[in-house]
Image 1: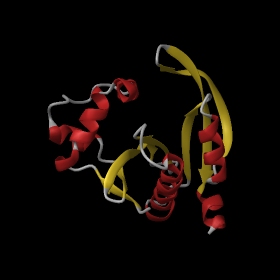
Image 2: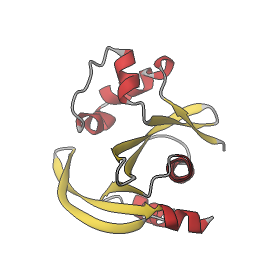
Image 3: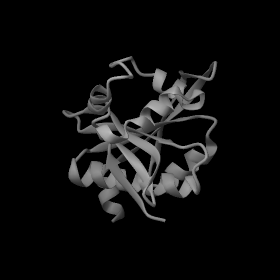
Image 4: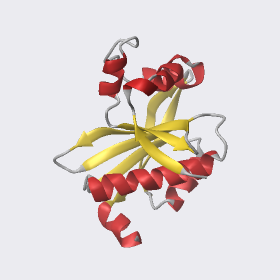
Length: 166
């Protein structure tokens, strides 16, 4: 299985449009303010300029994004969205997270990377812990998803810890 990260380009915005209109993913995209019209492909590319498609053997299976970038503190939040029916989802998530961290820490020189995980996703919690992330905080009822308020778990990794793993 070959996993690679590719930028969002004008010729592949249909994946983002499809996810945004899908009931399963639509709630995820509605968490963000409407920054553009969904029929303006260039605006979508500009908005997702710090996002990368996750490709598995040349097929797009997900999207990872750098969000909440703090250049002064050199901290960044990242999120990963995978097709709900993608094959080998856990391996794909693990490998794409590794590639993204390589990019964030070694190329962009961020000091801290963090992500939020819905508290009921225990499978993801153990995966992120295996991937070097550490628990930082529990954000009570901070996410509204599928008609319900959910707690989010904040996980982080410092560049010094990441470099020490190599």
